Length: 174
Image (cartoon, rainbow, N blue to C red; front, top):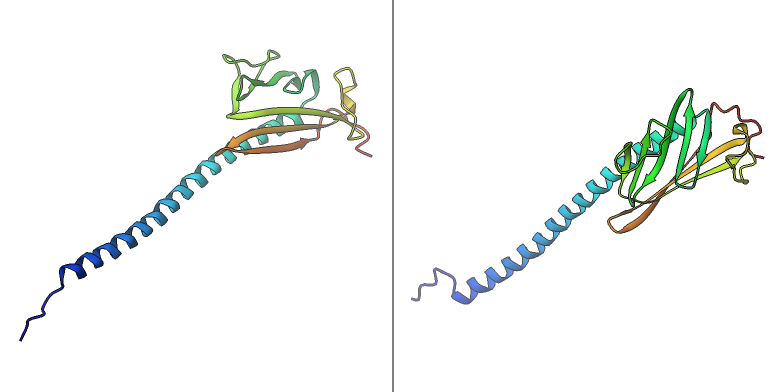
């Protein structure tokens, strides 16, 4: 009688090969899950930064009482008797300064970094015509803010529209 109490060498090698393949596939799923989690966390952190910046900008614009200077990337305004300015600084910063001096690399407080674009638009009460600095502040009906950024190499645009509350605006959009 022949004793067959164990496995042959070929059976052991075949079993280990199958086990290694299953382990490699399982490892890919684990790495993929971890990468997805990291990307989702980075996106969440950046969206929170964008939300905080947009909330601050909307509060600033909603309570302005007068505007001294505007451009597509900056604004100098008054809120009561206090003077403020907001501007895109350099390639990727949006800053606010509590003075009429536009913020630069050395002054002001960073609202958000990592932007690829920052655009301000100003509309009259008809909702279509651009508001100019020479127009009466009462005619300023809407301020649009657009922040562009690249998140994980995907371009995103965040847009908010603010209606100033304390500039005695008359005639809402038609």
